[in-house]
Image 1 (tube, helix red, strand yellow):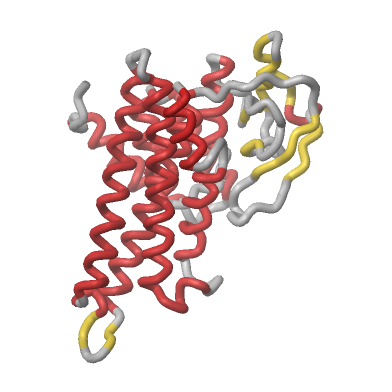
Image 2: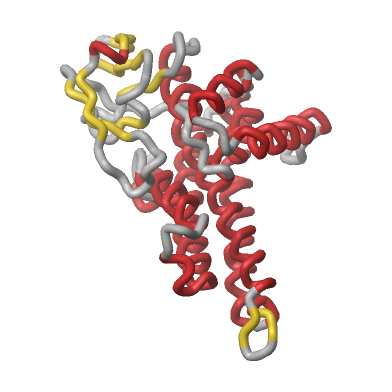
Length: 284
C-alpha cells in the first residue's frame, strides 16, 4: 500500500481546503449544496477521508459525514438528499437522523430504507450544538457498524484535532508572559509536540484503514477499529493540552476553540470510545 499522497490527492486536499474556507461562513444548507454539486459524496474511500479531515477542521455543520459514511456503505448508493443509518442495534445516538431525507435501517432481515419523515426521531442535546444526534424509535435492529463509518469519524476527529493544534500554536506565539512568548517555554513546546505526534499517529492509521477499505483487504475491520481507537486517544491528548495552553480563554463561549474541542470529543463518543475499540481488537 502506498502511504504518500499522489499529485491528484494533494490537489484534492488543497481544493477542499480552499473551498471549505470560502463557504464556512455561509448557512449550512448552502454549504451542503456546494459539497453535493462538487461531487465529494462520490469520492472513493481514501479520497473521502481527505475530504472529511478538512470538514472536521472546519467543524462542518452539514450532514455530509452521515450521508457518505453511514448511509452509503449500507445501501450501496447515495440518498435522495441527505441520509443516515441505524446499525448499532439500539437506535440511540444516530447521527443526523432528525434531518435525514432517507434512513437505512440494519434489521435482522437486511437493510431497509425508509423516508426520514416517516421515522420517529427525536434530537437529543449533545455537547456539540452544531452536531445533529437523535434517538430513533423503530422495530428490531441488528448490530454491525460499517468500517467506513468508523473511519469517517476518525478522519473527522483528526481534522478537529489539527484545528485545535493550529489555534493553540497561534495563541502561544502571540501571548506574552514574563516578557517572552508562551511558545518559547519548554513545557509548552513539549505539549505541542505531544499533540502533533498524536495527530500524525491517528492520521496514519486512518489512512491505512481507508486504504484497506478501498482494496477490500481482509484487515479492513481491524484497521477501522485501530483508526477509531487512535483518533479517540488523540482527541484526549489534544483536548487536554489545547485547553491548558489557552488557559482561562479556552473555557469561553466567545473563543473558537470550544467548537473544535466539542467536535473532537463527539467523534470519540459516537459509535464507541477508544477503549471500546481496543477491546474489540483484543476480541477479534
